Each structure stands twice: as structure tokens, then as C-alpha cells.
Amino acid sequence: MKIKHRYALLDRFAEGGMATIYRAVDQTTQDVVAIKLLRPDHAGDPTYLEMMKEEARIGAALHSPHIVRMLDVGQDDSGLFYLVFEWVDGLNLGDWVRAHTRAHRHTSWLLVSSIIADALAGLTVAHQHTRDGQPSPIIHRDISPENILLSATGRVKLADFGVARARDRNARPTGPGIVKGKLSYFAPEIIEGRVSTMLTDLYAMGVVLWEALAGHKLHEGSQHEVFREVSRGEARPLTGVRGDVPEEIVAVVARALRPLPEERFQSAQDMRVALVAATRVAPFAHSDVEELAASVRAARVDFRTHLLP
Image 1 (tube, rainbow, N blue to C red):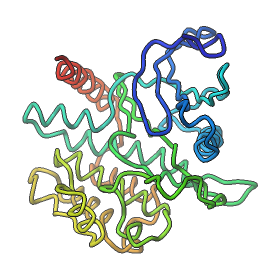
Image 2 (image 1 turned 135 degrees about the vertical axis):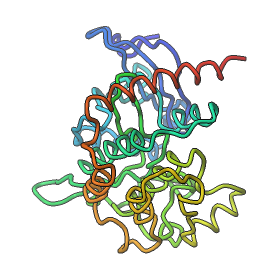
Image 3 (image 1 turned 180 degrees about the horizontal axis):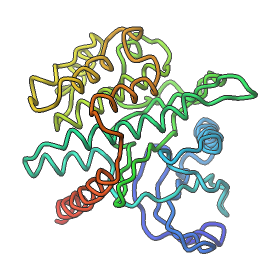
Image 4 (image 1 turned 180 degrees about the vertical axis):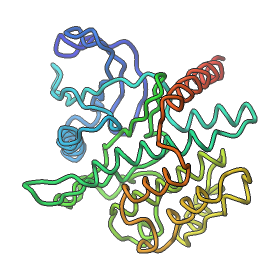
């Protein structure tokens, strides 16, 4: 199957509530790409179409080595809207952490810190976005381990701005039945009904950092139990689950997870600088890239093995 006589679909990679993700080949460049194709059952729904168009607008506005690049946008022969992104050959952070857990090994706190520092570099670009010369930060609103991609060459990319929104476009792009993001990564003020901000993104990044170091979820249990913990801003101290992480990194995690927004880092750049300082090394020195690349390749073998029947 081809889209617009240019993109040859190789296989279906993932199925979401709004769209299907395919791995494909761009027959013009021979590059492997990712195609995000609106599901046929949503073809006539203006809400989903608006969400795809907003993602295209945001994708065209963001340029960073730490954000997945959008390459093309259009409609297929049946009229379905699609987006084309670079293909990141590797794993997401969640699968990488799970591979360590299955092997009964802790993740490297240095690699985790470097990964999150690079993800924060991408988030900084989104938060510092301007429109017509005025600040217009793009709020990701779905920071999670699955949306931080790790390539087999040791690169880190922030993905899926599908529910993102620029501050100058606050009108709701979705209906009330559509839940944005994942409950475990919500900041307490979101549960209270307040709008997403840069600081809610940073809280979610703090949860991701905690989980990548701990090797398991910060909030576990039933939906009701998770809702209660999140609404109260409850976060177990990292030192209680892992004792080898330097106290400077523990302090970064703790500040990112403060229940009150004004007590957290006030920008992605501030959090990144603090995390880099806590590791006492420049993020992703050459050896770190090589170490992450080797770790991703090993984790991918483990991931594929566990997919086998």
C-alpha cells in the first residue's frame, strides 16, 4: 500500500485512539519514515481533524535535534489526513527501563540524567516558542516515558505533540470525553481543573525521571488510588527505593515533584541546568552517547525476545 504514490507502507507500528502509526519508506529519498494516518472511523469528525492539523502546525514550528522532526503533511487518496515524521530506530524510554527491570538491573543514573537533560532541551525549544515576536510557549501536555525516544545511535528525541497546544490557542481542540495525557503524569493542579502550563510539563518530567531511576511506576494501584495520590501531590522519596543515586540528583527530582507549582523549577532550561550540574559532567559526552547506543541496542534485543510467543 502506498500513500500519494510516494510513501510505501511497510508495517503497522502502533494503533492509537486518533490515528494509526505506520513504518514506511519515502520512495523519493529511500528513507524510513513514520506515517501518522487518521483512523477512517474519525474521518468525518472535525474534532480529530483539528487535533491533527494543530499537531502539524506545531510540528512545523519546532526545530531541535531533541524533537522528532515532522517532514510532510497531506491527505491520502481517500481524503484521510496524515503526518510524516522521521523514523527513530530504537526504543522508547519506558521499554528501555523495562528491559533493565527484567534483567534485575538498575538503570545507570548518569545515563538517565543525560537522557532527561536532552529531553528537557527539546522541551525548552517548545516552551520558548514565539509567535509574531511574542512568547507563545507550546505546552506538550503528554510527557511520559513512551514519548521520549532513544535511538540505536544514542540520540534522544521528544515525541508526540499530538495533544500539545500553544498558549495563544487555548480553545479546546478536543471533546470532553477525550482524556489528555496519562493520569500518573498529571500535576496536582490538573486534577483540580486548572489549565496545563509549562510547570505541569516539568512535573510530568519529574515523574518520568523518578520512574527511570526507580525502575517502576511512581503511582501504582487502582485508578482511584492513583487519582488520590496525584491529587494530593504524594511522591515517595527516591532514596526509599534506590540508595545509590547522588543526593544532588535526588534533590532535582524532589524539586520537580513539588505539589505547589511556584516551588518547582520555573523553566525547562532551569531544570536541565540543575540536572546537568547534579551529574557534574556535560550532558552526553561522546562516551555517554556510545554507552546509551549500546544499551539501547541490548534493550531492543530483550524487547523483541519478549514479543515472541
